[in-house]
Length: 372
Image (cartoon, rainbow, N blue to C red; front, side, top):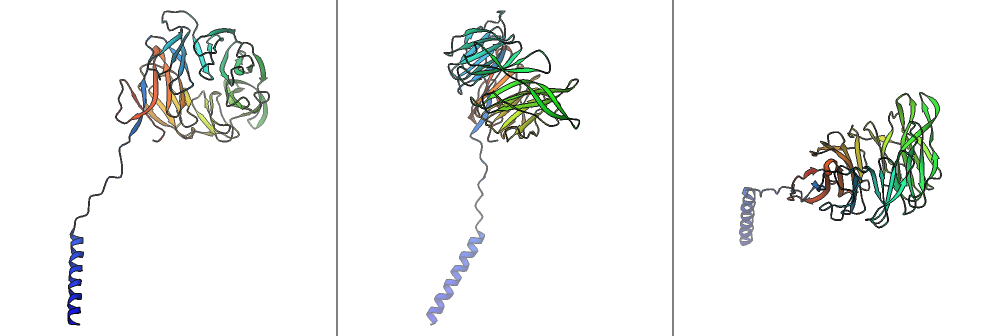
């Protein structure tokens, strides 16, 4: 029994010494939980090499795009802007009519609209044919198949417009509807004539229109219309309490979209335009907006080009970043949330990219990324 007690006492002494040693041992340094980002978003400079103003751009893939602009110019890139091929124009000394819009359905089928409503088209992605003159003041051309397309014809009046439809690739056009809308103004019912400015189609059947209706001298309300039968019938409504017309409209699903007013305000919807909510911190300037499947929306200051607003939640709010553009921005487009382009004066073109954090490129400008 004495021997057993001795061993118990020794075990207690050893355990106590070990505990004191453990308490005296300095704590291991904590590892930093934060890590440096592996990637970043940038605008990379990819200009055309001649002094021609670029006013529109359309992409069918991340690196496959067409840009249009002054002097009857249509450019194509197959490598993300590293090189540009002039399919039409490209001569700064030329006197041909300027292009206002360009739209590509796929890599072969594209249409370009001039400032005076002339229309040109390609069926191979490289050679262009003149389809003649469209109705006066035509804008917002969109196609949903190689044969079926839409555009807005404004009569020159401030109160009326017509949606035109083609079934032969743009050779002939027929009016679809004349816009009217029921609204409440000053607590009283009003039936207003409206002028739609933009048309957007998600499919051969589902489409949207945006514009305005005059409710008093120099005062308009934003008007919105939706079709589910390819433009044969429309449901028209107004954005309540709006004082300006819609100048751009983006939808990436039947329910989710963004309307931009000419005041610079923007409204988002999650129910197909049944209700609208003003965005938070939206750029309050005349802006160009672009959408990458709704995952990125970008607004650019048209006058100075020194600020860009980014939204990564369908336009619910925006964050602003500086953008030291060397020339005025004319158009922005995004193929998806990771690949976009902007173009402008003097052949200016930039590509939005996600690149490794240590990547550098001459003249690149930092941008906001979807994960930020």
